[in-house]
Length: 267
Image 1 (cartoon, rainbow, N blue to C red):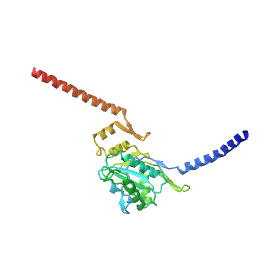
Image 2: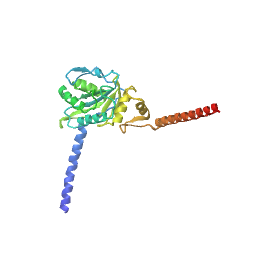
Image 3: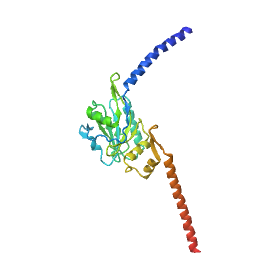
Image 4: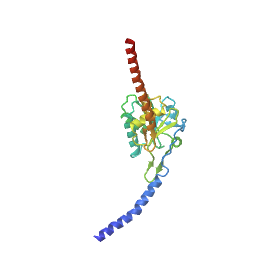
């Protein structure tokens, strides 16, 4: 029995430096990878990319149309994370009542210079089939290394090629911009809640997208970076609640005054 425990201890002792080595290698591989939020920054709109039909387009072609832009970064040979992000965004869109390409633009940019327009076209067709909007549009772009570097730098999207693994290390996030190309919100989540994506679109549009309830939601809820979600702002909610209570009280007193006035008139 003692020999068995000694053998187990020896195996564990050997595994400790191996695990430490693997952890160190992983930390080196992911060093410099992540998001460096650039909220309020203007992205360069004069960058040239290639759309899914093989045509050269300016990034500005998708801005200044009176609509905010929902931007994602992927690469099309990604083994898992990129598909999970696009799948998650597609599910989130089920809770957004407006069609992409109508109230807002959907743009996905590949950060791999090796990705082709043909592959982008396949992805575009795949995800458009899953959106329950007849007039939906989703732009998938590829580009040169210089254009990709300029856009990812401007948005704080940091990634790197890991030679040993033969793939990119990269974050996953939805970036929402105003029609002028100003970054208004990051949703760093594989599947942002539909409510949060909807609020971010309304926020980026400065209230031109959505209804009165959407604007009231944005007044009462504020984005919390620690939870990556819009949370209730207690003070503002109390202000709104107080205002509604005051209006209800005024309406009730007005009805009572009108009723008393009518009684006095008939007396």
